[in-house]
Length: 194
Image (cartoon, rainbow, N blue to C red):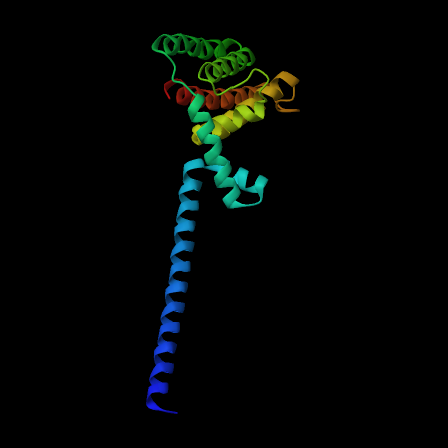
């Protein structure tokens, strides 16, 4: 084998090794960026990201769906006017006053108040929209209170169906209602000012 042939083989081998190194480094950077993007999405959408990932079976599909859903909701959601905000502040004061005398009625008032705000702000895009769709709309815009909304609605449904603290005391039932009001308050505060 001549010296020239040996040099050509060495140069080709070095070029191939460099190309492979560049290829694998590029893949690693792309995987790191993808993982960083997923982590930002997890932080941005909270538990809704995990829920959607389980439903879709893929983190990429979940991320795509959440971003698409957020875009749709952002285009239609509007802020409350100062007049509406003032009216809802008065109603929320009533929710808290009524709780002392009639916690079950207070839960109904809280639910109605939150639903009316969601409707006025266009989180509810259509009168026939399901509760689940309303929850998903809220979750992409305000993931910090979406679980509070779901849990408050669950407790309210139990109250309406007479299923609170089965076999429990009135005190346990009142505590459940207090938890629901606390959760509704978190949702109310977030959506009334947003």
